[in-house]
Image 1 (cartoon, rainbow, N blue to C red):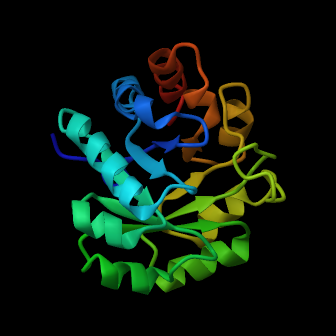
Image 2 (tube, rainbow, N blue to C red):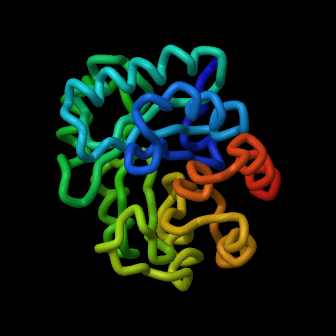
Length: 209
């Protein structure tokens, strides 16, 4: 299996330890991959770096049979250590160029953006893909003011990098998100809290362009 690149991807999942106990990391990883996510990020904001590495290796061990890329949130050094496909940085984390240096250029570097200006700046900085949001208020990041849907079409006109719309994305809202110009989305709690994770991922994936 050859893991997908951001340009080849339409559905980005995040395994967030705020929703998934560490003991369930392997089973949730398998469910998300079998459902059809193209990219899968490990987000473990409160975990020690050593635990992030351990969790990431556990995810890698069950992802070998899928064409799904593993992305580490924040910790470029962990991404380098485990030789995964990508690292993701926020506005307050390492610069894209620093993350690329740490990984020796072996990982893609994605960046979170919360406005059109930040998205344009992230492209200029050299990010390989962008997260754009949060579109709606979200329990994952309650301190972030939602940016809404108005700039989705414009950001796609201004930025040539793959753009993944994030923040409160779920099956109910997908039609209006796509109608606003989105081509790729990130889904977090709607997958992680689903009764049937595989079914929820498959159903949403089937509606993406």
